[in-house]
View 1: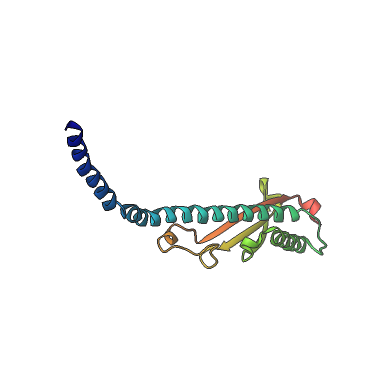
View 2: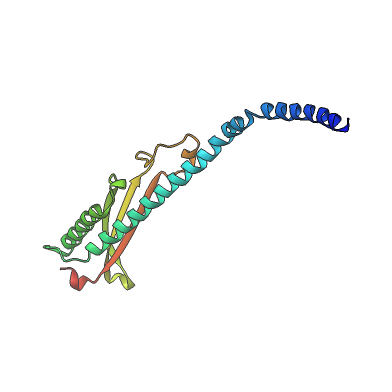
Length: 165
């Protein structure tokens, strides 16, 4: 008799347990639907900022290589012509070094007197990439407020006037 009473008591508990499991069936889908946009936004932000970092590093490398190219002798007729030719060579070298990721970059070279008592000449290579007009990945609506408008990098090389011409 005692055995039959415990079996009867166990049956309603099983029914209650099965009823609870069926009531919880859609909660996982609802939780996923609520958390997926957050996780997707975080992952998309990581990818976006990683690509921006890679593009910035590439611009820096290209600007440095352009400045190194300005050290090479260029044919010239005057000091100013030599500096312009070296600046053009610097931009040409920078454009060769830049990755296809940031091909839309702009190069500007300039020269000016520098160093102690302006005795030296400096060639500056400035690379800029308009990220707002040429994003690397499509922007999410709220993420655009945190993205940079432009990426830029510059490198300067100092030249001894005796060695320029």
